[in-house]
View 1: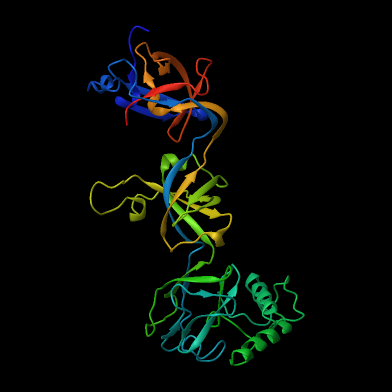
View 2: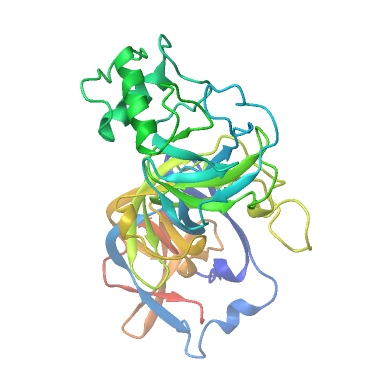
Length: 381
């Protein structure tokens, strides 16, 4: 080759993803003269790196936060504290008289908050409490109630697979009410219990003791107790990941945790400050981004403060047992295409290469001209 190629990274280079996992690289030779500075006076490159044969991943590393799963806003039932089914229920003023502390965990039948001294307790289920449940009612909420009464030892003999509020259900409710010193009405509603999917962590107190706890006002923000990771991806990157893809999370204080992508948001949000959009000072990344949630294989083993920053390695596509070189070793050849400088026995020769997949600073190279262990030139760091 009569003319030397130009270092791609010493020029204006753009890498574009194309179908099939490959890439097209468009480069314009630099005009700042820096290419010559990357070679020593003896013609050898300033540095070298080996050609390697190994698995290559197209994954990327992004920033995320370690949090808790399944956030839930819990609204007050309101009411005047007359008790479920009593004439005073739903009327008069409603004052928050106690609330579970932020950071604490509440389990089944545990106290969430009090309005006018009346406790609202946690029970497990996914359908919210939307009515006062009583004899003859049917539905998923009734089925959930019966399961909780059984789990707490008040529903002996109940058929929890049936969603009918039977006389036996009323008896179980009365037993539960008696255990907490409540009027034994056999009916139960929103000013007695709240359903959530399992044990709950108090993420935030949205209301302070003494505040007006009128119906519909948010009292608490809850989360599940299992750890999860959330991150934001540019729209283009989000299109390359999907639910079920494996990830590795670098945890605060050291250590890693394996997991998978649980969900990829369907809407890009350019206005949420967490995505880099919206107001604020200049110079930030204002590209619309999509929220991605990661579930961990061992969520109880992921230690660290809430909202602690973590690094998430997205695996992406994996090519098995391929030859690769550092992206920085690529040359834009004078006659077109790309090559690398092979350094052998104190001499340099340029070898044209066919590019495959890019990943983590390396690029797959195809053809018979390169072998594992060869040294290729790279720009000085």
